[in-house]
Length: 189
Image (cartoon, rainbow, N blue to C red; front, side):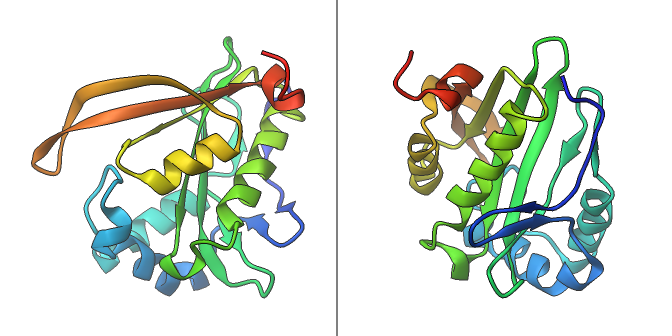
């Protein structure tokens, strides 16, 4: 495995994954304070002080070495504008497993930015990091995230019914995953 790994910007054809910066505060607040954006997330719409604290915490997360280490880079569009965030959390070093996730600003939906950003992180995961399995846990009502998982070639592994009490209701959890061999050769199962 290629650990420890220190974050360096990842460049796609149209987007860049880069560390969060203090000047992302307004755009991050606009995204994380939007109840519609947060509808399927584990947290309610955040206040400005909550977003400021999240920005400081997540901007400092730049190294993967041990379980629970994570990255939360900004997705930047071709003009360098903040378009959302990605998430990659190292779950197990022994099992070479990580969790992936994404949040996109409403204006950036439908442009392929999340797909491109997720592909960059999956290439990193199965390349330089040497991971075996990457999975996503999501609310199955989030059809856009379900569709993204499918576009990435992720398998639907589980549907956990009323898995957690969240935002005043029992919610289900969908689990999607992909193995290194599936990423490298999508035709081989």
